[in-house]
Length: 606
Image (cartoon, rainbow, N blue to C red):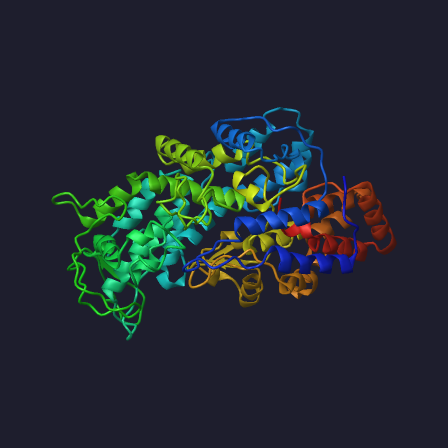
């Protein structure tokens, strides 16, 4: 195993600065920006730069495990792209634990996995991570897998304090949906068609309530602006298309260098999409300054004569509800929102977008990247209009989307299908010359920084010291950031620290994986981190140093490495750690763990 020397502060700080400036630079803005992380080229550069600093493990050649690998490996072979081997067991364990649960594997599970000789142990471990059982329990199940993917959906659906206490209802609804493995299309239809006499009493209605636009008095809702916002948000989340641009101007003569499909769309096309929500009436009957809403079907339709408070004036146009992908209208007597939900969830683009969103969450980059940047004129076409290919794997994305449909929109099935592919399990290491454009082929695993919530949860798991964090509006307390309902739950100091790590505030900002010297400073110097390293915090170090009978120093060092970096120390690292603890005992253990938390690999998913 090749390693980076321990306790080399200039090296650590220099690497942190290099990561922040050269590797995690802010992604180029979309039009308008809605990033979830660095773009593919940036991740490729990060991977190339940090691979040499990460520990080396022996690996095996990759073999095809299913249709994902058939598509990926055949295109790699055909285009003569260099390909990485399969990642090692220990790297796979850390990667899949973070991706499926947002948490590091614990030392004993690592030891057990590495001793296991079952050739199917990776699949067994994935099933273990994803398992949700109600057998023999008297409370609703709560698992790291459910926590992690409820947080993902809450990010996607922008769950936050704008919904009042309704945010907690919606979060619980999403959690329940994942618990029972509700078909995703069914969940989305529920959210799009909900009505309620109070969003504080009904969970699904809070999805639509979240995107209200007020009049300047901030007490009454501007319905046409709200309808537009709902059309824009639902297209972005569920169709991967960003209609924001055509909310103010036609696409022609504006978007030729951005999105060819949008150049053929007009503002009126957005209004006709928004008109599916035209019967929605959203108002505050319980107090005009209280964000408790009624959402009913008493609206009077989309009116272009209404005055916008956020966009240019509208002009007179036909606003018959019309699905922007197909030109379809509601059937006779069909409720417009029911029609919209039907058209949206049965269109292949809905499945493509869902698959692409999940793929991006597991790989750091979508098959179409960014995931909100589908250009339907360029998708699957060799005529790219001079903008470059949208994706080299359109056939794979279509196959995954149809498989998702055929398995009743089963998110667990989709996630397992992806992570059990050899493509997902490839190493980040590659032999031969590498070009950033190769990243689109997924011929190696791209290294990425952990998102803010996972960074803090990893600090807590590594130290074994947890804070009591409020979660939601009904008195629940949790140990992990990823168990919170929305960022408003976080204590002020923790929220500020995680904002420096690019925490998604689910409002005007978006999740960022960019780096900065401030992030390095927080891990190096923050009192919030340092107090978790003290033995008197009664965490992992206290248990190790005061075990009865006493643990050997070699075992203590090994446990600290497994807890923080999910790997065993090299001989040089072990010798150094043993000497440090022998010489300074408790302080040495604290210094060792502090050092590991400030290693680049601690904050990387590789």
